[in-house]
Length: 370
Ligand SMILES: *Cc1c(COP(=O)(O)O)cnc(C)c1O
Image 1 (cartoon, rainbow, N blue to C red):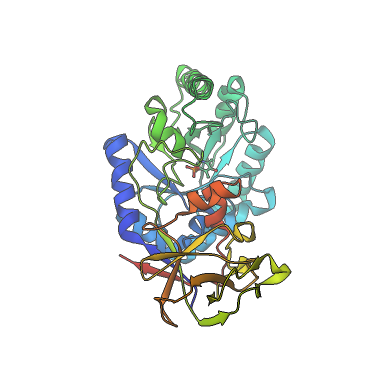
Image 2 (cartoon, rainbow, N blue to C red):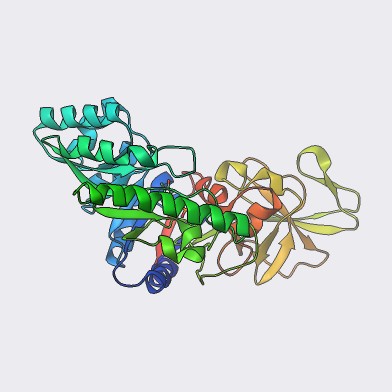
Protein backbone atom coordinates (compact mmCIF):
# COMPACT_ATOMS: atom_id res chain seq x y z
CA UNK A 1 0.00 0.00 0.00
CA UNK A 2 1.20 3.48 -0.82
CA UNK A 3 -0.21 5.06 2.33
CA UNK A 4 1.19 3.60 5.55
CA UNK A 5 1.49 4.62 9.17
CA UNK A 6 5.05 3.95 10.20
CA UNK A 7 5.22 3.32 13.96
CA UNK A 8 8.60 4.29 15.37
CA UNK A 9 8.90 1.98 18.36
CA UNK A 10 12.36 3.39 19.10
CA UNK A 11 10.65 6.72 19.81
CA UNK A 12 8.08 4.96 21.98
CA UNK A 13 10.92 3.42 23.99
CA UNK A 14 12.55 6.82 24.45
CA UNK A 15 9.22 8.37 25.48
CA UNK A 16 8.66 5.64 28.07
CA UNK A 17 12.20 6.25 29.36
CA UNK A 18 11.53 10.01 29.54
CA UNK A 19 8.37 9.34 31.57
CA UNK A 20 10.22 6.89 33.80
CA UNK A 21 12.96 9.42 34.46
CA UNK A 22 10.38 12.03 35.38
CA UNK A 23 8.35 9.85 37.78
CA UNK A 24 11.19 7.86 39.35
CA UNK A 25 11.56 4.11 39.80
CA UNK A 26 8.82 3.56 42.41
CA UNK A 27 5.84 4.87 40.46
CA UNK A 28 4.22 2.45 38.01
CA UNK A 29 3.17 3.32 34.47
CA UNK A 30 -0.23 2.41 33.05
CA UNK A 31 -0.19 3.01 29.30
CA UNK A 32 -3.60 3.79 27.82
CA UNK A 33 -3.89 1.73 24.63
CA UNK A 34 -7.56 2.43 24.03
CA UNK A 35 -8.74 3.33 20.52
CA UNK A 36 -6.22 0.88 19.06
CA UNK A 37 -3.42 2.54 21.01
CA UNK A 38 -4.43 6.01 19.79
CA UNK A 39 -4.30 4.62 16.26
CA UNK A 40 -0.87 3.02 16.62
CA UNK A 41 -2.04 -0.61 16.91
CA UNK A 42 -3.00 -1.94 20.36
CA UNK A 43 -1.39 -5.38 20.41
CA UNK A 44 2.06 -4.56 18.93
CA UNK A 45 2.31 -1.33 20.92
CA UNK A 46 1.28 -3.07 24.16
CA UNK A 47 3.78 -5.89 23.68
CA UNK A 48 6.58 -3.46 23.03
CA UNK A 49 5.61 -1.09 25.84
CA UNK A 50 5.47 -3.90 28.41
CA UNK A 51 8.97 -4.98 27.40
CA UNK A 52 10.07 -1.36 27.72
CA UNK A 53 8.92 -1.22 31.33
CA UNK A 54 5.23 -0.29 31.34
CA UNK A 55 3.36 -2.29 34.02
CA UNK A 56 -0.35 -1.73 33.32
CA UNK A 57 -2.46 -1.11 30.22
CA UNK A 58 -5.68 0.88 29.95
CA UNK A 59 -8.52 0.37 27.47
CA UNK A 60 -12.00 1.85 27.07
CA UNK A 61 -14.22 -1.15 26.33
CA UNK A 62 -14.04 -4.85 27.21
CA UNK A 63 -13.66 -5.73 23.52
CA UNK A 64 -10.38 -3.80 23.46
CA UNK A 65 -9.28 -5.74 26.53
CA UNK A 66 -10.27 -9.05 24.92
CA UNK A 67 -8.20 -8.10 21.86
CA UNK A 68 -5.14 -7.71 24.09
CA UNK A 69 -5.78 -11.07 25.78
CA UNK A 70 -6.26 -12.75 22.39
CA UNK A 71 -2.93 -11.20 21.41
CA UNK A 72 -1.32 -13.06 24.31
CA UNK A 73 -0.93 -10.09 26.64
CA UNK A 74 -0.98 -11.05 30.31
CA UNK A 75 -0.41 -7.68 32.03
CA UNK A 76 -3.16 -6.09 34.12
CA UNK A 77 -5.64 -4.22 31.90
CA UNK A 78 -7.80 -1.44 33.36
CA UNK A 79 -11.21 -0.80 31.81
CA UNK A 80 -11.33 2.99 31.91
CA UNK A 81 -14.89 3.47 30.63
CA UNK A 82 -18.06 2.30 32.38
CA UNK A 83 -18.73 -1.33 31.42
CA UNK A 84 -22.24 -2.72 30.95
CA UNK A 85 -23.52 -5.32 33.44
CA UNK A 86 -23.98 -7.77 30.55
CA UNK A 87 -20.26 -7.53 29.78
CA UNK A 88 -19.19 -8.75 33.21
CA UNK A 89 -18.86 -12.45 32.29
CA UNK A 90 -16.39 -11.58 29.50
CA UNK A 91 -14.58 -9.12 31.76
CA UNK A 92 -14.14 -11.79 34.41
CA UNK A 93 -13.20 -14.41 31.85
CA UNK A 94 -10.53 -12.15 30.32
CA UNK A 95 -9.27 -11.03 33.74
CA UNK A 96 -9.80 -7.36 32.96
CA UNK A 97 -9.97 -4.82 35.78
CA UNK A 98 -13.07 -2.61 35.67
CA UNK A 99 -13.25 0.82 37.25
CA UNK A 100 -16.36 0.95 39.41
CA UNK A 101 -18.08 3.92 41.01
CA UNK A 102 -21.53 2.95 42.25
CA UNK A 103 -23.32 0.38 44.39
CA UNK A 104 -25.44 -1.13 41.63
CA UNK A 105 -22.48 -1.97 39.44
CA UNK A 106 -20.43 -3.23 42.39
CA UNK A 107 -23.30 -5.56 43.28
CA UNK A 108 -23.62 -6.73 39.66
CA UNK A 109 -19.86 -7.37 39.51
CA UNK A 110 -19.93 -9.29 42.79
CA UNK A 111 -22.83 -11.44 41.58
CA UNK A 112 -21.16 -12.12 38.22
CA UNK A 113 -17.89 -13.08 39.95
CA UNK A 114 -19.81 -15.44 42.27
CA UNK A 115 -21.54 -17.04 39.30
CA UNK A 116 -18.23 -17.47 37.48
CA UNK A 117 -16.57 -18.78 40.61
CA UNK A 118 -13.63 -16.45 40.01
CA UNK A 119 -12.17 -13.47 41.85
CA UNK A 120 -12.39 -10.05 40.22
CA UNK A 121 -10.15 -7.09 40.97
CA UNK A 122 -11.77 -3.67 40.63
CA UNK A 123 -10.52 -0.11 41.11
CA UNK A 124 -12.75 2.56 42.60
CA UNK A 125 -13.09 5.65 40.41
CA UNK A 126 -13.58 8.95 42.23
CA UNK A 127 -14.93 12.06 40.52
CA UNK A 128 -12.94 15.00 41.85
CA UNK A 129 -14.04 17.57 39.30
CA UNK A 130 -14.17 16.19 35.77
CA UNK A 131 -17.89 15.56 36.09
CA UNK A 132 -17.70 12.33 34.15
CA UNK A 133 -17.39 8.88 35.77
CA UNK A 134 -16.68 8.30 39.43
CA UNK A 135 -18.25 8.51 42.87
CA UNK A 136 -18.32 11.60 45.05
CA UNK A 137 -15.14 11.68 47.19
CA UNK A 138 -17.19 11.45 50.39
CA UNK A 139 -18.87 8.24 49.17
CA UNK A 140 -15.56 6.47 48.54
CA UNK A 141 -15.24 4.83 51.92
CA UNK A 142 -18.71 3.28 51.84
CA UNK A 143 -18.24 1.95 48.33
CA UNK A 144 -14.87 0.49 49.27
CA UNK A 145 -16.49 -1.23 52.26
CA UNK A 146 -19.09 -2.65 49.91
CA UNK A 147 -16.36 -4.00 47.61
CA UNK A 148 -14.29 -5.55 50.37
CA UNK A 149 -17.32 -7.11 52.05
CA UNK A 150 -18.01 -9.29 49.00
CA UNK A 151 -16.59 -12.76 48.63
CA UNK A 152 -15.10 -12.39 45.17
CA UNK A 153 -14.24 -8.71 44.64
CA UNK A 154 -10.81 -7.30 45.51
CA UNK A 155 -10.01 -3.62 45.72
CA UNK A 156 -6.93 -3.23 43.49
CA UNK A 157 -6.74 0.52 43.52
CA UNK A 158 -8.36 3.94 43.47
CA UNK A 159 -8.31 6.41 40.57
CA UNK A 160 -9.38 9.85 39.52
CA UNK A 161 -9.04 11.78 36.26
CA UNK A 162 -8.08 15.43 35.66
CA UNK A 163 -9.93 18.11 33.69
CA UNK A 164 -7.26 20.65 32.90
CA UNK A 165 -3.89 19.24 33.94
CA UNK A 166 -2.27 20.06 30.58
CA UNK A 167 -2.60 23.80 31.11
CA UNK A 168 0.01 25.89 32.90
CA UNK A 169 -2.50 28.73 33.52
CA UNK A 170 -2.77 29.50 37.20
CA UNK A 171 -6.50 28.79 37.45
CA UNK A 172 -5.97 25.37 35.85
CA UNK A 173 -2.95 24.57 38.01
CA UNK A 174 -5.10 25.41 41.04
CA UNK A 175 -8.01 23.31 39.78
CA UNK A 176 -5.80 20.26 39.29
CA UNK A 177 -4.23 20.71 42.75
CA UNK A 178 -7.73 20.88 44.22
CA UNK A 179 -8.71 17.68 42.36
CA UNK A 180 -5.59 15.99 43.77
CA UNK A 181 -6.42 17.21 47.28
CA UNK A 182 -9.97 15.84 47.07
CA UNK A 183 -8.66 12.54 45.75
CA UNK A 184 -6.09 12.22 48.52
CA UNK A 185 -8.79 13.00 51.07
CA UNK A 186 -10.91 10.15 49.66
CA UNK A 187 -7.89 7.82 49.75
CA UNK A 188 -7.06 8.72 53.31
CA UNK A 189 -10.68 8.16 54.40
CA UNK A 190 -10.29 4.60 53.10
CA UNK A 191 -6.97 4.14 54.93
CA UNK A 192 -8.53 5.50 58.12
CA UNK A 193 -11.24 2.86 57.81
CA UNK A 194 -8.44 0.29 57.96
CA UNK A 195 -8.69 -0.70 54.30
CA UNK A 196 -5.72 -0.78 51.91
CA UNK A 197 -6.67 1.44 48.92
CA UNK A 198 -4.31 -0.48 46.63
CA UNK A 199 -2.64 1.36 43.75
CA UNK A 200 -3.59 5.00 43.81
CA UNK A 201 -3.46 6.71 40.42
CA UNK A 202 -4.49 9.94 38.73
CA UNK A 203 -1.89 11.53 36.44
CA UNK A 204 -2.53 11.75 32.70
CA UNK A 205 -0.21 13.37 30.15
CA UNK A 206 -0.80 16.90 31.37
CA UNK A 207 -0.11 15.99 34.98
CA UNK A 208 3.21 14.39 34.01
CA UNK A 209 4.31 17.77 32.77
CA UNK A 210 2.84 20.03 35.42
CA UNK A 211 1.83 18.09 38.55
CA UNK A 212 4.49 16.06 40.31
CA UNK A 213 2.30 16.09 43.42
CA UNK A 214 -0.15 13.87 41.49
CA UNK A 215 2.19 11.05 40.47
CA UNK A 216 1.15 8.89 43.45
CA UNK A 217 1.60 5.09 42.94
CA UNK A 218 0.96 5.00 39.19
CA UNK A 219 0.59 7.39 36.25
CA UNK A 220 -1.59 6.96 33.14
CA UNK A 221 -0.07 9.09 30.38
CA UNK A 222 -1.37 8.27 26.91
CA UNK A 223 -0.61 11.09 24.51
CA UNK A 224 2.81 11.67 26.09
CA UNK A 225 3.98 8.15 25.31
CA UNK A 226 2.78 8.55 21.72
CA UNK A 227 5.07 11.56 21.49
CA UNK A 228 3.15 14.70 22.38
CA UNK A 229 3.82 16.35 25.71
CA UNK A 230 0.39 17.97 25.94
CA UNK A 231 -2.76 18.47 23.96
CA UNK A 232 -3.25 22.14 24.73
CA UNK A 233 -1.89 23.54 21.50
CA UNK A 234 0.65 25.82 23.16
CA UNK A 235 4.39 25.68 22.62
CA UNK A 236 5.58 24.80 26.10
CA UNK A 237 7.18 21.37 26.02
CA UNK A 238 8.11 20.43 29.57
CA UNK A 239 9.00 16.85 28.64
CA UNK A 240 11.08 15.90 25.63
CA UNK A 241 9.23 13.26 23.65
CA UNK A 242 9.15 12.30 19.97
CA UNK A 243 6.08 11.48 17.88
CA UNK A 244 5.78 7.74 17.35
CA UNK A 245 3.56 7.79 14.27
CA UNK A 246 4.63 8.91 10.83
CA UNK A 247 2.07 8.95 8.01
CA UNK A 248 3.72 8.26 4.67
CA UNK A 249 2.61 7.77 1.12
CA UNK A 250 3.94 7.87 -2.43
CA UNK A 251 3.85 10.47 -5.19
CA UNK A 252 1.94 8.37 -7.70
CA UNK A 253 1.40 10.83 -10.54
CA UNK A 254 2.84 14.11 -11.83
CA UNK A 255 1.11 16.25 -14.40
CA UNK A 256 1.56 19.69 -15.85
CA UNK A 257 -1.33 22.13 -15.58
CA UNK A 258 -1.54 25.28 -17.68
CA UNK A 259 -2.04 28.70 -16.12
CA UNK A 260 -5.70 29.05 -15.12
CA UNK A 261 -6.46 25.33 -14.79
CA UNK A 262 -8.05 24.19 -11.52
CA UNK A 263 -7.31 21.36 -9.10
CA UNK A 264 -9.73 19.12 -7.16
CA UNK A 265 -13.41 19.35 -6.22
CA UNK A 266 -14.94 22.79 -6.23
CA UNK A 267 -11.95 24.35 -8.04
CA UNK A 268 -10.67 26.00 -4.85
CA UNK A 269 -7.17 26.30 -6.35
CA UNK A 270 -6.25 27.52 -9.82
CA UNK A 271 -2.73 27.47 -11.27
CA UNK A 272 -1.38 31.05 -11.32
CA UNK A 273 1.12 29.95 -13.99
CA UNK A 274 2.10 26.67 -15.65
CA UNK A 275 2.54 24.32 -12.70
CA UNK A 276 3.36 20.68 -12.01
CA UNK A 277 0.85 18.98 -9.75
CA UNK A 278 1.56 15.78 -7.86
CA UNK A 279 -1.08 13.28 -6.75
CA UNK A 280 -0.75 11.43 -3.43
CA UNK A 281 -3.20 8.62 -2.61
CA UNK A 282 -4.04 9.80 0.89
CA UNK A 283 -7.42 11.33 1.68
CA UNK A 284 -9.88 12.02 4.43
CA UNK A 285 -10.96 8.37 4.45
CA UNK A 286 -7.43 7.58 5.61
CA UNK A 287 -7.81 10.13 8.38
CA UNK A 288 -6.15 13.07 6.66
CA UNK A 289 -8.53 15.83 7.79
CA UNK A 290 -10.32 17.55 4.92
CA UNK A 291 -10.19 20.75 6.95
CA UNK A 292 -6.49 20.98 6.02
CA UNK A 293 -7.33 21.48 2.32
CA UNK A 294 -5.07 24.22 0.92
CA UNK A 295 -3.51 24.44 4.40
CA UNK A 296 -0.81 21.77 4.79
CA UNK A 297 2.43 20.72 3.15
CA UNK A 298 3.86 17.37 2.17
CA UNK A 299 7.52 16.44 2.42
CA UNK A 300 9.10 14.96 -0.70
CA UNK A 301 12.88 14.60 -1.05
CA UNK A 302 13.38 16.91 1.92
CA UNK A 303 11.26 19.76 0.55
CA UNK A 304 7.78 20.78 1.73
CA UNK A 305 5.25 21.15 -1.10
CA UNK A 306 1.95 22.93 -0.43
CA UNK A 307 -1.32 21.08 -0.70
CA UNK A 308 -3.43 22.43 -3.55
CA UNK A 309 -7.18 22.17 -3.68
CA UNK A 310 -9.45 20.08 -1.55
CA UNK A 311 -8.40 16.85 0.12
CA UNK A 312 -10.51 14.10 -1.49
CA UNK A 313 -11.68 10.84 0.07
CA UNK A 314 -8.69 8.86 -1.19
CA UNK A 315 -6.29 11.39 -2.68
CA UNK A 316 -4.77 14.82 -2.37
CA UNK A 317 -2.68 17.01 -4.63
CA UNK A 318 0.47 19.07 -4.13
CA UNK A 319 2.01 21.97 -5.98
CA UNK A 320 5.39 20.84 -7.29
CA UNK A 321 6.24 24.20 -8.87
CA UNK A 322 7.32 25.04 -12.39
CA UNK A 323 10.22 22.60 -12.68
CA UNK A 324 9.81 19.68 -10.30
CA UNK A 325 12.82 18.33 -8.44
CA UNK A 326 10.95 15.19 -7.51
CA UNK A 327 10.17 12.00 -9.36
CA UNK A 328 7.17 9.81 -9.74
CA UNK A 329 7.16 7.07 -7.01
CA UNK A 330 9.09 9.24 -4.57
CA UNK A 331 8.11 8.84 -0.91
CA UNK A 332 5.80 11.55 0.50
CA UNK A 333 5.54 12.30 4.23
CA UNK A 334 2.19 13.65 5.40
CA UNK A 335 3.13 14.04 9.04
CA UNK A 336 5.71 12.67 11.42
CA UNK A 337 8.47 13.21 13.93
CA UNK A 338 10.83 14.93 11.50
CA UNK A 339 8.22 17.11 9.84
CA UNK A 340 4.88 18.76 10.56
CA UNK A 341 3.38 16.63 13.36
CA UNK A 342 -0.13 15.78 14.50
CA UNK A 343 -0.16 18.65 17.02
CA UNK A 344 0.76 21.19 14.31
CA UNK A 345 -2.04 19.86 12.13
CA UNK A 346 -4.55 19.83 14.98
CA UNK A 347 -3.78 23.45 15.89
CA UNK A 348 -4.72 24.57 12.37
CA UNK A 349 -8.16 22.99 12.44
CA UNK A 350 -9.11 23.67 16.03
CA UNK A 351 -8.76 20.16 17.35
CA UNK A 352 -6.26 18.15 19.41
CA UNK A 353 -3.52 15.74 18.31
CA UNK A 354 -5.49 12.86 19.90
CA UNK A 355 -8.17 13.21 17.24
CA UNK A 356 -5.70 13.25 14.35
CA UNK A 357 -3.99 10.07 15.62
CA UNK A 358 -7.19 8.15 16.49
CA UNK A 359 -8.69 8.96 13.10
CA UNK A 360 -6.02 7.25 11.02
CA UNK A 361 -8.25 4.68 9.41
CA UNK A 362 -8.00 0.92 9.68
CA UNK A 363 -7.32 0.60 5.96
CA UNK A 364 -3.94 2.27 6.49
CA UNK A 365 -1.44 -0.50 7.27
CA UNK A 366 0.77 0.02 10.31
CA UNK A 367 4.46 -0.77 9.85
CA UNK A 368 6.55 -1.24 12.95
CA UNK A 369 10.18 -0.17 13.24
CA UNK A 370 12.30 -0.62 16.29
C1 LIG B 1 -7.42 8.28 28.05
C2 LIG B 1 -7.22 8.35 29.50
C3 LIG B 1 -5.97 8.66 30.03
C4 LIG B 1 -4.82 9.15 29.18
O1 LIG B 1 -5.01 10.50 28.81
P1 LIG B 1 -3.86 11.32 28.09
O2 LIG B 1 -4.36 12.70 28.06
O3 LIG B 1 -3.69 10.71 26.73
O4 LIG B 1 -2.63 11.17 28.90
C5 LIG B 1 -5.80 8.57 31.39
N1 LIG B 1 -6.84 8.22 32.19
C6 LIG B 1 -8.07 7.94 31.72
C7 LIG B 1 -9.16 7.58 32.66
C8 LIG B 1 -8.31 8.00 30.36
O5 LIG B 1 -9.54 7.73 29.89
